[in-house]
Amino acid sequence: MNSTEVRSYRNRSTDASTRRTLHVLNCSGPFIRSQNQLESIPNFTSMADRRKGDEYIISREEMELYKQNGYVHLKGVLSEEEINDLEKEFMAFIRREVEVEGRDFCDMSADYSKPIESFSIINIMLPSRHQDLAYWPVTKDTRTASFWLAIDNSTIENGCLHFVPGSHLEPDLRDHGSLHGNRDKSHTLSSNLSEKDMPKPAELSRGDVTVHHERILHGSGGNYSNSSWRRAWVIAFRSQETVKEERRRGFTHSHNDPLEVLNAVGKQS
Image 1 (cartoon, rainbow, N blue to C red):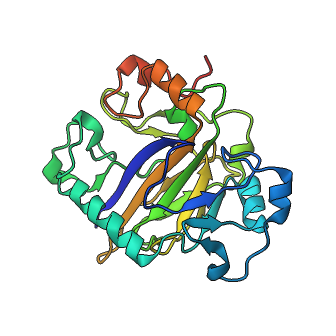
Image 2: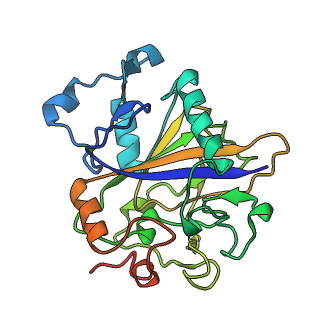
């Protein structure tokens, strides 16, 4: 079965439209609240306590898990009605009813020469482990909250994400290499696990999200299910200044970016 992701990169002031606003209240992420506000956030005991109109409030425990592990699993962020709306948009993308330029509609398990009729996955890093920041220019402010929304139940069998808890705290990025030789042949980068790394699966229900740090080592597995897709919608929230600096360098998060720009990512300049 297929594993697909739709990716979007937004700055911090952009309205998330049909997606619920999440108060990501941690001191290492791009959405900061004052200490007084932090002290006012309770520990929730039910989903009804967490959803306030278009807002989803996270708990103190989840804040600490994010800071400690580099990611957090948030349950029931979107309702079934909201997921249905996104699913329609998603399938329009899969059917090529949404215009996608150049190489941005691709099977990232292979190089760009793979014909579309042979695609097994679409726009997803498989099965390589990587850190997101290795794909991006290292700017003055790299803080990113990447939201991975499950359109389908995401399980070990159908290739859910795995994270290496705490790897975001390492002072340097891991070494990454092109999975297929060079960035002109394939967009995909890969890094190796060390002996001490213990990847942890993040199994999600439809409508759940994980939020992860730009430096955490993570990746997804193959879909070995005979009955389920593993579709996901990914949005990375970042500061306006970071987005502007990336565009100044000619970097747009597209597979169509100039090769010299792509080869400069993951490096301090």
